[in-house]
View 1 (cartoon, rainbow, N blue to C red):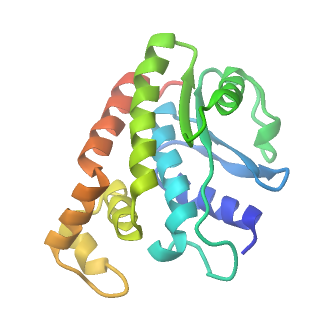
View 2: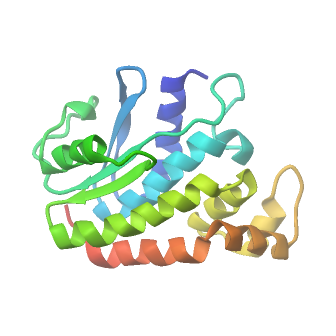
View 3: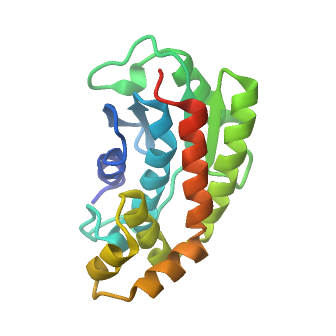
Length: 203
């Protein structure tokens, strides 16, 4: 699987977490990509899963055939704001405040960070970007097992269901709980709820 194919697959997998419409990921210049999530509150969950699939997709059994690029990562800048135009196919050619904010987040992202949040509201941006920075630090420390446990949790599976579905063979519910605790899942879950409250579903 080539890098552009891996990015497209990550976009497909990540889109499963969105409750609203998601425009297909657009890969350009070989390793750059853009994805439009039409419900802003979904953007952080989609961003987390996008990185999870890129880093651990093969270990999670998510859309990776094992024939190409291994554990890779990507910088992700979430821009929340009005969108003036979203082409049906090449969404990277869209325009609007959300696109500009996302680009600004990439341009100003500090060294060592891989996720950022930008919004037209400075107070909202400061609050959510702090949460995003903490989640970014947690993801950087995940093992494949911790990523798998979080991925199931984000999909709404309980720990018993996750334990039974674990690959290559089932584990105990206590084992799943341990992976989630070490991954910082409770903090991530609270952060996602806070984003839902503050950002909501508006465009």
